[in-house]
Length: 185
Image 1: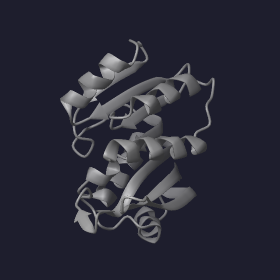
Image 2: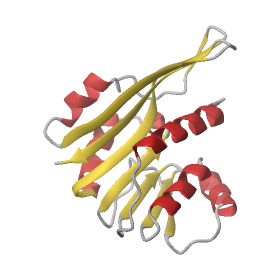
Image 3: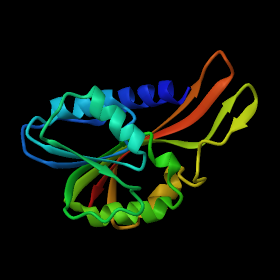
Image 4: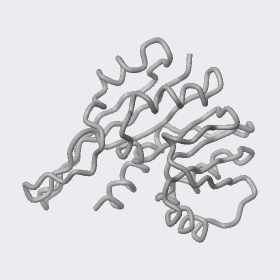
């Protein structure tokens, strides 16, 4: 179910991504969604993309599925522990931030990793996923509602987009999702 949810979220997040012929330094957090990575490669044909994931298996899987490309660099690390050696213009994450234990700490870290005017574009599961009236615990953090994110970012980011969505399906599955675009001030 999470794979289907991730694809849905990637398709919707795609609405907020405008490509460019400019050369950007891009960081993608999480790499379970090769379709999303392929879209970034096409939309930003001159840009370098670092893909970070704590799962070596996920990195190996995406490396097999995506055609070899000198613009992609894989980093096997937890984003919360990783110390970036360069600044990024764009940071993307499709349905990976739900695993983060310290969401505010992550936003502060990503702030340091962004160039002035850089953007973070991400989707995440907000609080809960229900299936057959049983609560599944996919989510590590419990405080990423839009108002709380606005409080976390204070004067560091400008909120460009916040979009909320509740997914409900016939099989009694539901999830609360958000899509956010932040710009570093």
